[in-house]
Picture (cartoon, rainbow, N blue to C red):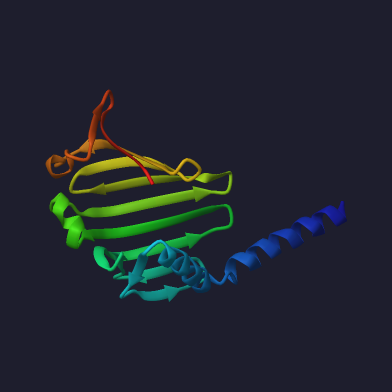
Length: 171
């Protein structure tokens, strides 16, 4: 019985140590290298890291050299079983502004080890509230506008379904 207790205590201490000493900044730079291969660059950011999370302050996302969006902050929480990314105050730039003056106040992405090919998303902004998911295996994005407010600028890319407005895309 003591062996089981000490083994569980050792495993718990190992997991806590892995979490605390995880090289969050280096993982971010690796992700940045991967995105650069897809012509996506994150620039102008200030990086802050602590024991629990990694924060990017005022990042700008560029796609093929054109500025796309700017955010006030991106908080990445790389927990061992559930990872989350919270982006606040997303403002469209350049070609993304053509959709209209749409801002996203809060975007939350959650990923679980139990469903490794599925990312859940929740968002609210000037368009209302939205929920959706990203299916990484099938390269599919689905977003439901659950509480629409001002969707006129987005209506040309949204579809009307039985449950309301939604957006679907393959990538």
